Length: 144
Length: 106
Image (cartoon, rainbow over all chains, first blue to last red; front, side, top):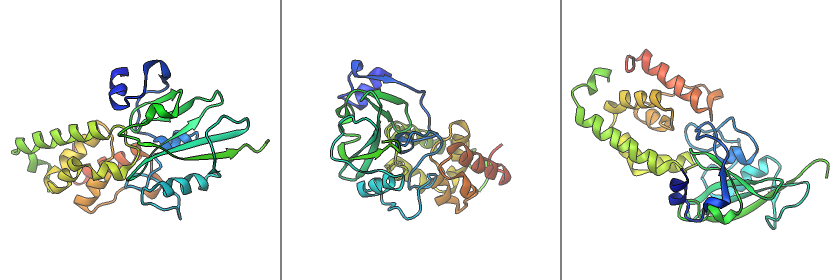
């Protein structure tokens, strides 16, 4: 699997990530970024999508999606106590992926229909499949 | 449309399975169903029409995946409840039951 992921994501070096689940089609990266694993959030047939949120697959649609769940646009992806950060990846066709920051500063990603991984850097998933980071979102915890 | 309609078309099944294999390989990192559906292999499967419905249902039974757009486009049916949206196993189950009711799947 390491070789396969490296082929898909050339910047995903073996010492910079760990697999953290089995492969599953039960949920996708948007769901996982929200900390859930029960549905496949998407606009296409078979997915579920909040009412009133753009359904065109654009980066703006992904931003509105996370805003729907209480996130706001953030200036950076630095680790901050009491702040949950999510990044949206995209390319010229729209959003491609989302990843959630962990409390240790690493990132957790559900790779499409494949596994979840924890990875050190956002750049680990840059490339022809996911493009690059196009927006950072954040949500402050209620206690902060 | 019937299950028997694909019996004498081995080339159809071979071609279908090749398209399935290609689509699965190329879309395994996709989160967007729209991108999955836009893939040329998926579009070709849709263009094959009613003869591939039993094959699609069998494939869905073997390994649930996002074949719902193709099935809906070809058959015009929408057997899953709204509450199943986003739940691939429930959607697959609804389509498999639909296929059994129509005699398209054992």
